[in-house]
Image (cartoon, rainbow, N blue to C red; front, side):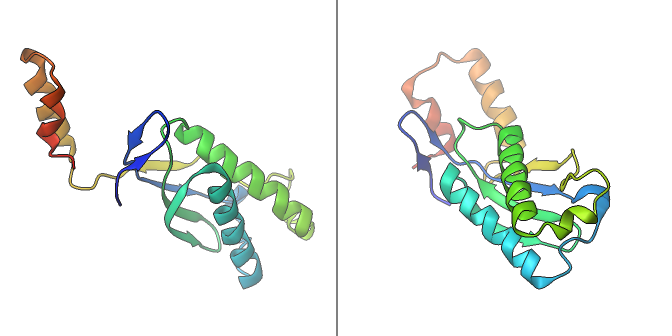
Length: 147
């Protein structure tokens, strides 16, 4: 993935996010629901400037590998994906709500992992240690060999 730009930032962020339907119900066992859910996530991503690299809507959990601008927090991205998809799925398929005791589609929690390209945590630590004693200059980014 290439560097991305907004009006005030340049970024290369990638996240692996996972969450489940409430009570880990197998709500997406039917193909039509699984496909509609994936389609909703793609529509939300387009609207909010998220870039979905890979996605799997399994029968009882969601995996999404995506990038998003740094103006959003991980929590905001998860909240946006969950709330809009739940509202639309309940509106289009009201029978889903009957399978859930309290009418909530998604579990409260989620898993999030940042994913690096060729930049590892060791390199970041080395970069910080290196600059502890060095004066900052415009050449400091050359340490990462950004292009």
